Length: 485
Image (cartoon, rainbow, N blue to C red; front, side):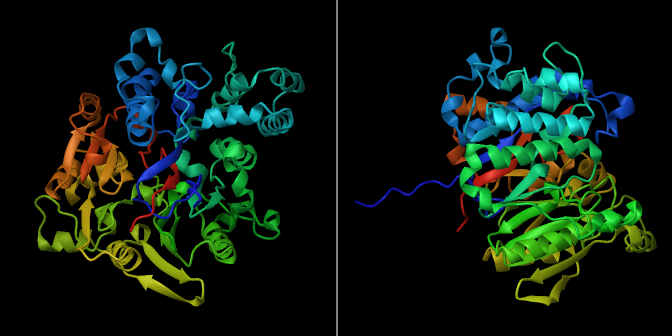
């Protein structure tokens, strides 16, 4: 009798294959403790209203993910889940009513799991306390906490009796940045800012200690520091190894993109290329250097993939000029002349011909090459532009993550409802547009199903989420996607 094929726990070979499993982290109480004086140090542009970001925004994200990936958790139950007397217990890790899906996987749940092991708990408590400069007596007290309370403390910085012991890590909601799954390997990050150091530490312990990843221990990769890196001057800049997941995209099983940006250094790209080729993870890597500006941050704030022949991108890096109101020909030429700090460079390395890289003139040329040559696309490659490529909407809407979309399956993406011009551009490109609240009602009523959706932009509420400067691509770490044909 033939053996039944087992579903892998980890496998990501594209940006658009049907999503089956991912890591997320819902907004925790730490976000409600970000103060104006520390907001930018903690990488936030503004302070957010915690109850709104949870109930009116992120909870929709949880529900739509579950409907697509683990429908038994929510189908026919939404009214009960959101009943006032339930007090959001469905969304709270550690509560008996928590959804606890093995498809939409909450990081805080995984963290609590590994803290049930006494040896892991001892090491992680010591590591966090050393990192945060916690008093010895407090460290001993932390060892007495149960796993759920300790996991909550590590993330929010606040104990169950509401005492703040150290800073929160409010960026933990952006799970893409802690690492990236490349085929059946995991590449862990090296954050650029001190505010995210504890995130990287917690992620490392989760990946190396949780049973979910036990079969992949030899395939969890960490970028080594450059030899004698500690002797380099602190202002060495590019020699510092920093890498965040928003700068890494798996566009095919053989091809990886690595961004060099405000958060990811040239040296990290160098080390990652050598490591990935040495381990035979991919056959080619394209380095996409974007300006080191807060406006862009990572390459996934500049472009993401929607279908094998459709991409959304910022027109600043386009060969197609941004449309400006009331401009004359001289103004158009001068305004669109490349400026030193606005340039993008694209260099592709092949593992068998490292000394003969391929250069691309513009971002569209690279993305078109991916669609045609990596994905075998025969259709015309289409580009949808932030703000419909109209100034000033292109820049305004890119700032609120018009290009930072998550494909749940090919052609079905999640994005913010506030980016009106970009949404119009999707409509003009033939996409259906539906608000998530209406879509969930249609799912519940049986009017449609996740399987029936195609070429659809799902509008997600975003008044508070957008203040955190990250979209749904940032708020997801895919662990498993179906391979695309």
